[in-house]
Each structure stands twice: as structure tokens, then as C-alpha cells.
Image 1 (spheres, rainbow, N blue to C red):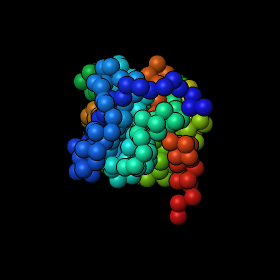
Image 2 (image 1 turned 180 degrees about the horizontal axis):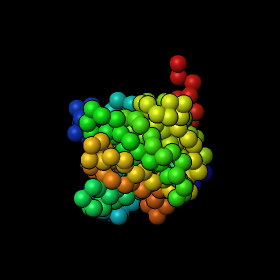
Image 3 (image 1 turned 90 degrees about the vertical axis):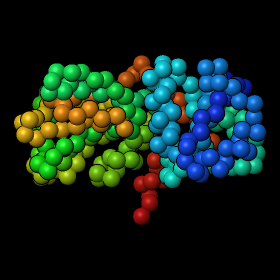
Image 4 (image 1 turned 45 degrees about the vertical axis):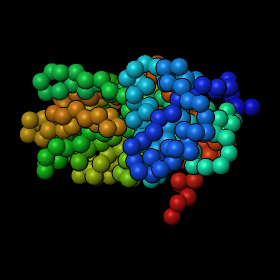
Length: 262
């Protein structure tokens, strides 16, 4: 059983990368594609960055469809293998759906402007100058660290735990763990703090200390808000997305496999 209704009307989204463009001709001829406004699901041809771009575009328009990724990028962690032979629509309809809930970031700047953005991988706070950032960290309204002195800090979803979070020595989280990773970036003080694992119902607030002297930018995946004063992060439960994976190549399997890479 696939766990989803048949997808008969498919839309095609193609990255501008050379690798994706090379595979475009054969893929266009393999199926009668429809516009995304009429589709049951979307096939995204490219890499992880293009997958994030496709999903963010859906969040922006409010029309959210399941997405089946075909890897013509570098890592392809969120994608399925590119197989020139075989019927793509059969693969899509045999695929396994995986629900992914993005983070919602509410960033308030030093000028009082409020920006709301969503992130599928992580929300990161990063210093803007040579000086380290000083950040107060609150979880569910309670101060947990009065002042983190670091290059920054991030909150990652399970889907994003193998991205920037892993590079910052954060934990890898199973997709169904219902957890978030709170990970410092090059922490100076407290020296021994390596981060925390939080339930995904947690609401995390960051307050910037000395913001004029030590400005900080907040980044939700690729969307940046500079000179923030306060940032609130929580799961956007009303914006769940669906990724489609071939059997044996689900995001769960990849998250497990990543922990045995040496």
C-alpha cells in the first residue's frame, strides 16, 4: 500500500542547474505534464536546494502539494535516485509519503519591524560582525541560558538535522522523533554547553544582548532578516508538507544511514 490516492496529474519543476537541464528532454517526453495549479503532485528535478525552493514556493502561495524529488544535484538527501529507465508516474504512485512540518520564525528587528518566515531545515542566528554574538535563550517562556557567547545558534527540524545542524556538531534526529535540535555555533561561553534536544511542541525565544554593538541576523533556510532584537521559533503545525520517497529510500532510512558514515 502506498498510503496515498493515485496521482494522475503531475506537474514538473526543473532546476536551472546544468545537470537538471541535461535530463529535462527525456523527462518532458515521458509524461503529459500539467500546470501546478491543476496537479495532484509535483515532480522536482534538481538537488536539495531546489527542493527547498519548491516547497517554500508552495508555502508562499498556500497551494501545498506532495513533492517527489528526482536527484540531479549534489547531495540529494531529500530526493530520489535518478533512473532514466522506467515509468516515472509508476514510481510516484508507489512512493511512500512522509510528512514534514516546517518551523515558523517570527523575527523582530531593532527597528521594530516583524518578519515571519518558514524553514524546513533550520532557523539560525548568526553574528554579523567580527565580534561574537551574545544571546539569551528561552524555552517555553523560561530562561535556560542567560547569555550564550558564540558565533550563533540554531534550531533544526529532524529533516534538517543532517544539514547545517550536523556541521555544527548537533545531533541527528529520526524523522518521527517529534524533537528539535537546539545547537550552538562555535560557542565560547558556556564552554561546556553542546546544545539541547527539545520536544517539537517547544517554543524557543532568542533575545539579542548588546544588539547595536553585536548585531545578529536570523536566517530561516535561505531567507535572512538582519539586525534582529528578538526571534521566536516554533513548529508551524498548520503548514505540513509531504515528500514522496521510493521504497527503501525514505528520509528515515537516510537519517539512519547518515549516522554510520565514517
